[in-house]
Length: 498
Image 1 (spheres, rainbow, N blue to C red):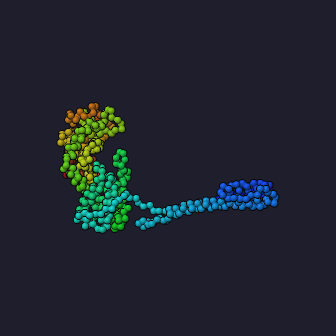
Image 2 (tube, one colour; image 1 turned 30 degrees about the vertical axis):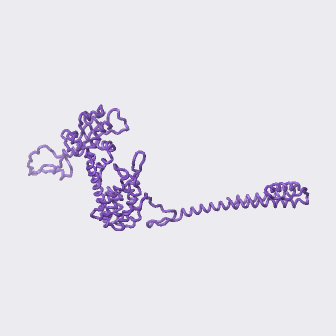
Image 3 (cartoon, rainbow, N blue to C red; image 1 turned 45 degrees about the vertical axis):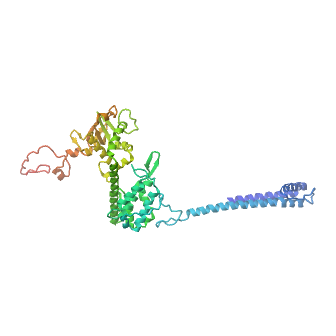
């Protein structure tokens, strides 16, 4: 298309040039002279002097035309050719630059762990900023680390050194991620089995806090899965990839499926990977729990967290949102007030009071890995101890009676049932801080949280076990056995004679 247009343009230019030359040839000689005089006048501006005749006739017409052609057409044609060359050169340079960029863009990249692509660059995993860290501890346990384990542990700790302001954990002070991780590493180095791998797993398990949490005007919020991010960052390290396959896979599984061993897949027929991964998970759980308990004990040495929790409860009781007339619909209620009693939802009470406590005190109520499997969280256990000591805790309702350490109830409010409710009989001075009016709905205590009414009233009989059907055991007195008559069939449901 472009070649045809250029050819047409050149044909048109040559045609008009020839037509103009013919027109000049048959034109009045004075007109050609006038053109030469105009060229001479323009040339005077650039310091060029051209002699022009005063008169022109038919005999001088050819000479004047050749002079006009030499002084105007040829230079103009030369400038046109020069401009064309400059334009073509600029276009060629731009085209070559674009071609080179495309060649570089589609050129195959270097191999990454045996993986390569034939077109374009190979996407590489992105990791957060890290600093160089060198282990110079006097801990004797470091001598048990191999060179590969030591280098990998240094690489993992380098991420924490490079991101000191990352999310440190719920109810923890900002900037304490590195000290907390070092405490985990020191405890993990005391493990009996595989102390080096246990230390790496303990440190790598905290890597997800760097990228999985983002801070905005409302505080820290999680945007990614923490365990998956930790495993992704660990797997991007070259020193992790250079480890033996069994240790490498077990270490990755211990980090990725932290707290969820049931989701860990099976790799081939080698059980060593699964055993080692479970061993590292158990060591990490023990290490984390030990660090939390030590931090909790340190808080108890400095102050009594339960005393501050009680003071916070008494101070904030008047501000807690109860389900009562005037409560806006978009505010979740902490509980109900009915006939002088306070019915408090365990989780919402903790969520309301925990931010009001000093940050150092919150450490005492941090839920450890072992606490997650318990029926009572540390903060709820503290609430129950405080309320029981004050004599406010309701542990008996009709025939149901529970221990103070598990005094959580299931209640019905309106058409809904609510579990894990703390029931309090508050003193008069604290009842004044409750809403003046009772809640809308009728509140009925149905049963204790950890005691099933069906299980309490039912038992399994021998006939149930033999017949394969579970039925409540009859509490009526057993009738005397009648002797079986001769010739009468005895079914399996009848009582056999003794």
